[in-house]
Length: 207
Image (cartoon, rainbow, N blue to C red; front, top):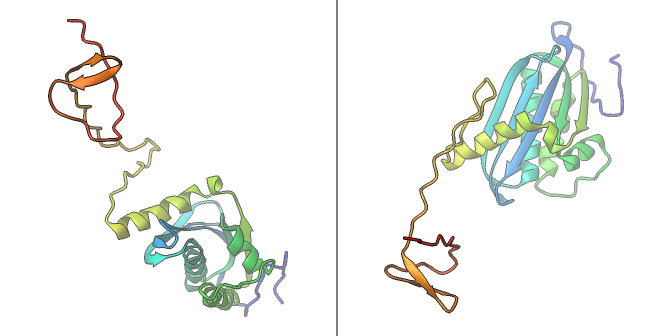
C-alpha cells in the first residue's frame, strides 16, 4: 500500500521496475491575448536536481488556463512513460493547483475535460504532489512556454547563452533629425514634417 501525503496523492498500482525517487516538474503555460497564441513549457529535474527533460509545445489559439493544464498533462505523461512513479509538480497557476488539490471546483467547460484527464494520468503514479509558487520562481518553465509561443507565431526570440550572458538585442535605428526654428514657442520645420503623436527632443544649433 503506497504511502500518501497532504491529500495531493492519487495512488496507482505499484510497479517493481519503476523509478522510486522523486522527480520535479516545473510547469508553465501562457496565452498572448487570453485567448490568443498559447503554449506551455515544462522543466523537469531528477532527484539530485539534474536536468532530465525540457518540454514545450505551441497550442494555437486558446487561454492561459488551458495552456497551464496542458503543461501539467505533459509533465505527468512524461513521468508515466519513463517509469517515474513519484512526481512533484511546481506551478505558478494558483487556480490549477487548487483545483487539482480539490480546494477549488472546476466550473469551466473548457477545463473540465483537462482536469478529468489529469486525474486519470495522475492515478497511474505511485505518489504525486503539486504546489504553487510565484512566477519569479518558475522562470525556466516560463522561458520554455515563451519559446513555444514564439516558434508558433514565427517570432524570433533572443536566447540566453548557457553561460548566463544575455543575448545581444538588435541595434536601434538612429534617431532622425530635422532642421527648424522656434517662434512664439512653436517649432517650425524648414523641410519635412512629423506625423502626429511623435515625441521630439530639441537640440539648439549654436552655429
